[in-house]
Image 1 (cartoon, rainbow, N blue to C red):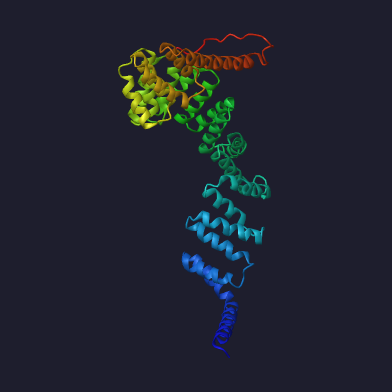
Image 2 (cartoon, rainbow, N blue to C red):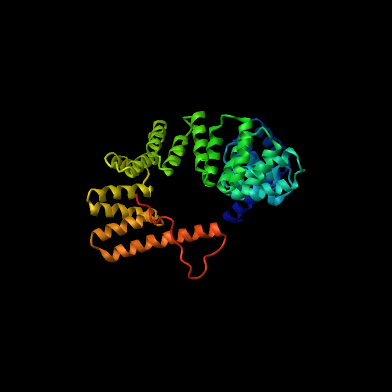
Length: 397
């Protein structure tokens, strides 16, 4: 017999022998894998389960346990395909779909977790603890995906079932706010107050809802209440300051923005709006350094470039102003004041055609906004050829 043929024969015999040994010791491998798993010896358990798999490739149990070992080490991405393999082999294995859904949730693959939790919820007994758990998890999946309209019904069900659960109610109030269901925010606000009368976060949520409902005084009162309840709550002074700014109460707004900066010295928007309030009062001296600092912290603040342009134009530095206005235009192209300022600047620089283009843009934005307002007020469309008069025209900062 040739050596190479002899070697192949020996190898085949050895493989047969190893297979027979593995087959005869499969129960021992399984018991060892489970024992190691229970002792927290993950590496040894994994090795035993993988050895077991060599003779049981269609058995879902090793895949399920290998997934569990990965999940217990917070390796959720590695656990997911193992759970999916086990689920494909045995869809009705107890606890397997829940483990997969939780691994997806913890791996922040919320979109993929939703169908798994939905199946679990449909199969759970109504009003059972399991059903409530899946309801909450579905609500939080949608919430995490910013699907607030979809999250709200699940969170509302959970809140109704657990009247003492404050975090669920706060998440529900946020969902109603961000899905523009403002009156429902106020309903949940009263429920939160019953649990925590000094909840600054609830006051802020109610304030934002009232502001969206055009109740400026009510919104300001709510934010004042929040400031009093918890003056170090993030954004509480900023929220109040912004509302005061929109009401043109500039000195008081500045005080609130300064209070926010005392809590958070890197709060770029507070710097921006202090400077903006000073510009509104024609006090330009201290505004530019604040705006420059704000832009360094957050280069996406279009209003900061607009205000820097206003300062430069006021100083007669037209080229600098143009650069700032163009930067603002890139960031906030739908802001009527940007185009209005650009148009005026181009006209002052003798660039009449460019001035007309920008002023036309400003006019069109204003007319579009006015038509939208008309539709909201009248509940219908303007008649053909019917003129609409803007209530104010471009903001004259």
